[in-house]
Image (cartoon, rainbow, N blue to C red; front, side, top):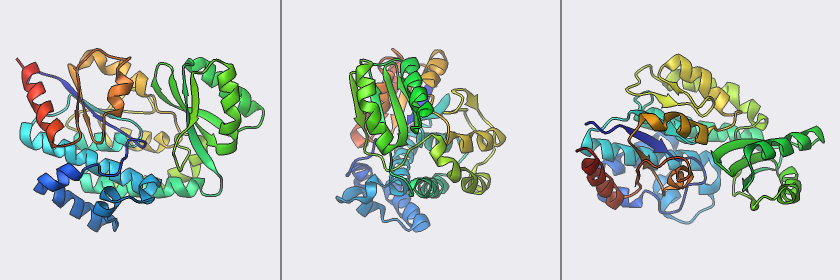
Amino acid sequence: MSVKCAFLFPGQGSQAVGMGKDFFDNSDIAKEMFSLAGDRTGIDFQKLLFEANDDLAQTEFTQPAILLVSVIAHKLFTEQTGIKPALSLGHSLGEFSALVASGALDAIDAVELVNLRGKLMAEACSKQEVGMMVSLGLSDEVVEQICQEQRDAGLQVWAVNYNADGQIVIAGIKKDLEALVPILKDAKAKRAMLLNMSVASHCPLLESAVEPLVPKLEEMIKDEFIAPVVSNVTAQKYNTKAEALELLPKQLVSPVKYKQSIANIDDEVDCYIEFGQGNVLKGLNRKATKKPHFNVSDMASLEATINAIKELDV
């Protein structure tokens, strides 16, 4: 195939009750992966994903749920097309799905790994009321300066997700984030809104989660990359186990350079395919690239994406 595809995978915030049900109802592969993931983690994924519950908002469950649906979408696509990525990229948690797509991580191992990652993140944040908020309409530099000034004043707030121009996520202590709202609005932010997050991702508050994750990374990551993965930490490609073991622990406490990653790879690919619930990354990419963007979130979008890729490959 001549079309160069970047495979994209969403992170936390993309979850929704009912995600993956169309795959489960219509695919034996999906049913088997639900079963294997449940056996490995002890999580009833059918109940977690298909019934109203509070667990889906808790990071130790959110992370394996999102990853499971993403890697099922990817597997169904590759089973039907045989298409390999030119490179893979995930937003935060999605980097682990990207590792699956690049052959460096087994899908069910990945479910177990991010379940542990979620538990460690929750534990790191358990003694404080933490959160995340999104700022819209301000430049990175203005948000960074505001956060630095407030840290100098004793608050714990950090710019952590560089999603798109004018959209940046801030993590920290919840009351400190709430104090940030009027400051951001005085700086002419179009919006400053707390997100439904149970942890404060990609900031120093997660430092205690780093070391316990390393042994599981060493056990599960393989040196068998079929395509590079783009690091959230550096916005650069990597394709060895040694690099993964250096970068993935840092990812917990470092900002996600998503928009920088897209800028760095856009000239290398012809299109983007987003695997998993919804099309969150399509929205982020709208300002960053004019390349076609497809998503695989259910059986209908799977078929539509396969047909669209065929049309590009002429």
